[in-house]
Length: 158
Image 1 (cartoon, rainbow, N blue to C red):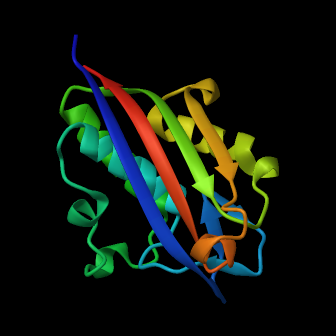
Image 2 (image 1 turned 180 degrees about the vertical axis):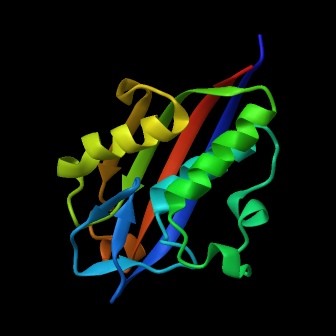
């Protein structure tokens, strides 16, 4: 039966002067995520979940932040390349389940677009990509609006 489960997590600071990308969607907000790429915390967590499921390392191994090739890169490209690595191993994605932790902005209006974007890259249906969000009830760096976190789990099948 060749089933594999993966789990990924990613964190980014929120800062003034950067655009905010979550799940491949640009979200209007006065802060954006700080990172070498476009800092899409959700897509990075999904990449790590996919890579981890097949013991292929992590996003930093495949797309290092020391490489100019990945400076300001669109994380949708990183997800597509990750999907190609998964396919090369003879696997396909069955589903993704992800949770975002952030105080603001509210992402509910963008979830359907995120699902469609991720599903399109991974060859899934929108119903195969679950995206949820929660706050940390004003606790910690997320609660203070200093950063955001994404968790992702995936199921792969050979």
